[in-house]
Image 1 (spheres, rainbow, N blue to C red):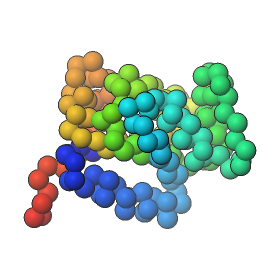
Image 2: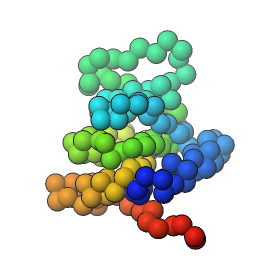
Image 3: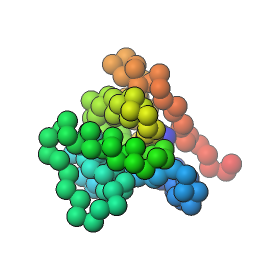
Length: 151
């Protein structure tokens, strides 16, 4: 979802998140990281761990292969689709977008469902139009909030 500051991206997504949580058929996850310019896929995977795990003293593996395998196992145990919301996604590096696509594919290959909802400034939409991100665009629906005032 793309739109300039103040056009209601976060406000539009909030009721959707609440409905999904109340329905209890889909697990809602979100990144709480404040320093968005430093958010990586590793940060988003950590958010997924915290939102999916039922353990209080969660210890994340430091090796990436172990971390991803443990995440796949955790998603399978939940037996529900998972949706990860990322606000201010325009600050994500384009390689993070490519890695998110790969994570979605790995989860799907393992029999799970992971969807990612990105919300950000028009820079996000422009980044997704780049030829280098063509493989992502083919799997993406872009919604733009442009001039909804008065409607």
